[in-house]
Length: 252
Image 1 (spheres, rainbow, N blue to C red):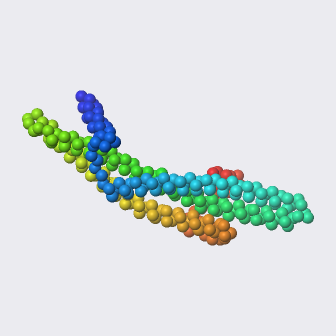
Image 2 (image 1 turned 90 degrees about the vertical axis):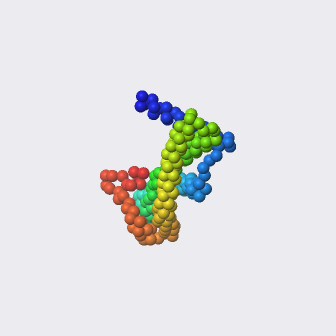
Image 3 (image 1 turned 60 degrees about the vertical axis):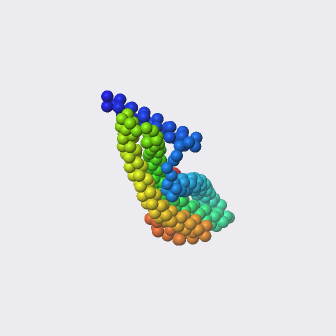
């Protein structure tokens, strides 16, 4: 009997919410709107799409850089081999080998910075922001329920008041109040999460954008010392290749 009662309540709630959604889409039903909060939610969703695009482009850059570094490493090895076997061009092959190996080394360092940037932005977008948007979805569901039961109560209050309708009005009032409290709580939860998300987002992106800029600038300026210093500043450690183990680049 308890299970049947739960199913009945769930079915009734689903019916009311579905009716409310259809009514809103047809332009017949009224909808509770928090203009300030919904504007913040729209901005968050728009920013998430833009951050996802940055993430996708950064991942493409990482893949392309990885391929270039791998080629430079192979080219350096080829030049070094020819330097040993071509005595008349020993120096020419030798300094080309050194140049390619230095470029590959700096490329690996830059790749470490870019992958750290990707990992941090990915956490922000797909965990932190996504968690807030899950709360937003719960808030939106609570808003639909609130409006559905508010509409019910308004319709009953417009009708006659007698011995048959008063108990229904009283029950409707009780259900409306319960859903109003749930809606108010979810609205407050979303406001708090949006505030903390904004603070966290600014902090994370500030650090990651400084890292990205400094690493790229140092790499293309050929400043190896500055490039390595940038990684130390952000506590990024590159995996050192072992004799029997593949390098951290090969593991990617």
